[in-house]
Amino acid sequence: MNLNQVVQRIKALALKHKMVRSFDFGDISNFLNDKESSYPACFVQDSPGSIDPNGRITTYNFKMFLLDLVHVAEDSKGNELEVQSDMLSVAHDLIALLDSYEYQDWKLSSTPFTLIRDEYPDVVAGVACDFSISVMYVKDKCAVPKSGPFLFEDVFNKEM
Image (tube, rainbow, N blue to C red; front, side, top):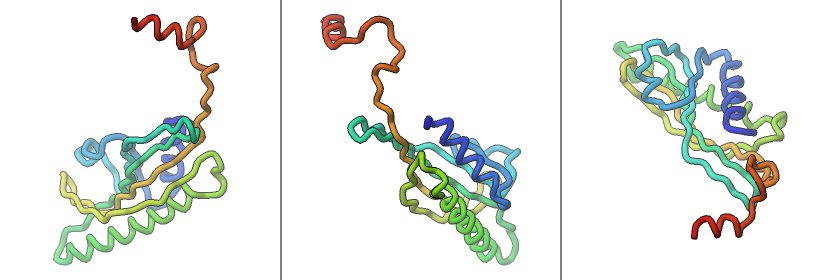
């Protein structure tokens, strides 16, 4: 699986959840400053990943934000806690879907989470989950697009 396929599957699963109205992928600051954002929302931001040629595994690292608007009133703290609790429940659901036995082509890692609150420009709260998805890396140098043979001697002689 490539990055695009991984992100599209995460998006499809997130949008199937009845409590998620929108999904986006990219930089969280762009999402938070977007006036068109609809809540509750699932936002996924990429983090540095890794390619293990010996284990033949590619690991994609992500941070998933599940956010909803906080009703600012006399009991704002109580409303904030309610939103965080609801979004944590959504996180449980999405992690269960991502880790489903139906998906044998990837492996989900453990997912630490942080409760969050933000005020730009909307007052939102929710949860941020860090997770990794590992997929098989097919180390096939024969499939590399190239012209002519690719030999160590050719590379070594060009550098000299």
